[in-house]
Length: 202
Image (cartoon, rainbow, N blue to C red; front, side):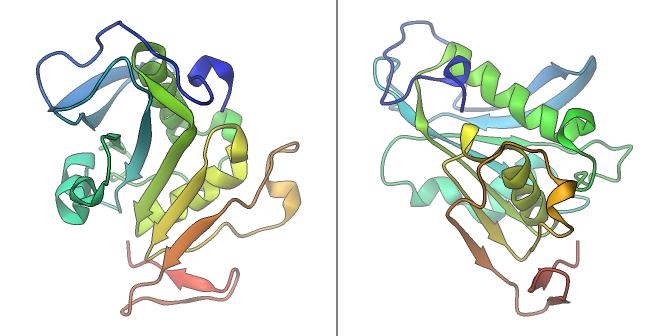
């Protein structure tokens, strides 16, 4: 993660970003296009204390709000943490793009834009930024990890997904990967022989 996206070890900030709502849908401009995500802030968020940030990605035909409800990750947090749940577009069938390289990948650029926006206005611990996903979203976080590596993410967790697949030439040079992560294949999913993981239905 770059310094522009947060301060390693914690950085007290006084600017309030979140408004009064704990959970709300946010519209952001990414690459000149209006995109959306759901953001969730703990009621005990403290702008004087640096918090973890977790980005969670949905499967095909889902939304950020859907995956927030389905996974319930916030209830498992052991300390105040900020969560964001990006939305894929209607035009894409609400499906995240995996294969397009980082510079031209609208969804990966959206993820970076969201992380930057939040870190610019909130107290985020740059050493504890994570990504998780289910089904297509699980594939996406594995591909995203290979594109941005430890510059942006501490670790990723993929549920019912696999990847990345291909050759090293398919990924951006100079990135540090793989990172520590967790993969939990779904029992109903079939094998993806390209990468040895479980291929998601969505």
